[in-house]
Amino acid sequence: MKTKSLFIFAMGAVILGLFSCAINTNATRSNSAINTQAEQEIKIAGSNSVYPALEVLASAYEVKNPTTKVSILTPSSSKAGIAGVKDELLDIGTLSRELQQEEKAYKLEYYLLAKDGFLVATHPSVKNIINVTTEQLKGIYSGSIKNWQELGGPDAKIVVLDIPKEVAENLLRKYYLGQDLKISSEAVVLRRESELIAAIQNTPYSIGAFSLAYAISHKLPVNHLSLNGVEPSLENIKNNKYPMIIPIGITIKKTPAKSVKEFVNYARSQSGKKELAKHNFVVFTQKK
Image (tube, rainbow, N blue to C red; front, side, top):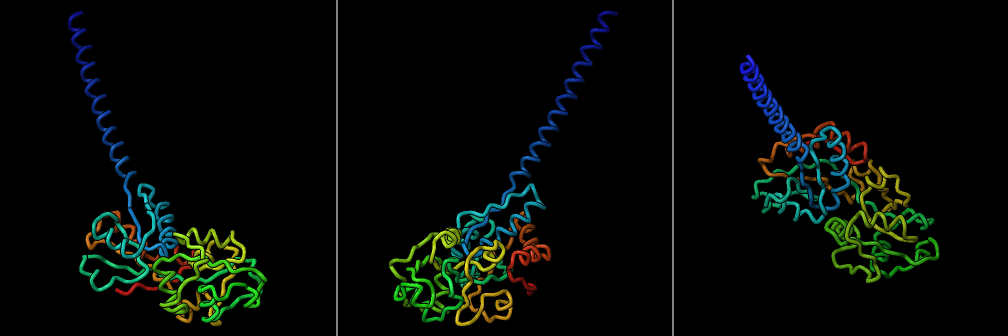
């Protein structure tokens, strides 16, 4: 009888051990699946000027999809964003322009999400100046106009803040400065738009150009300058009266990962557009 009891006890221990092992195995698998989901990442990089819009979309998307991390990496250029997606180093490239003809051969999809204005602004210490002409802007950036007093402002030296990136360079030159204008050697050259935004708020008598949507959404204490009498407003961007407009574009592979496709679908959806519009980007109906 005693031997039988010991046998039953031993078998129970084995069964319990197997059951415990099965639970642990399932728990391990479950935890592994959760960890895999939590580590899901979408890598984005490219044109610096598109970052304010993508940061808005990324933040909103992560709230709705907590197991997906949207990483916006160090900015570079539209060209680098395209190359990164083509070479599968990035999931999404940010573009401040459309794909060029030769880039369309890379089997990429391009989507225009919204538009932003490129604002010329000054530190609030620059009083009595609300508009500048093309010639005055050329004088400021070339250094031939050195004091705000020459334009009816305070008696103070003009501090030019510059970011020689594709949008800043191209838009200012295309519409106002011209291709041959040499920027003053006294201009303070910054690497990124975010650095310029910080500098213009903290540098008295400074002037610089950056995202209008960012300035409005964050209620930056800077003076918005009209150019040749045209105010940098959302309405003027919508009706094409304000010329310096930044296209908010992205590019992905034609056959992206599921997580990337889902993010892009959100960015193009009514929810994504509503989020962008809430942050003062100009949205529109995407043509098919």
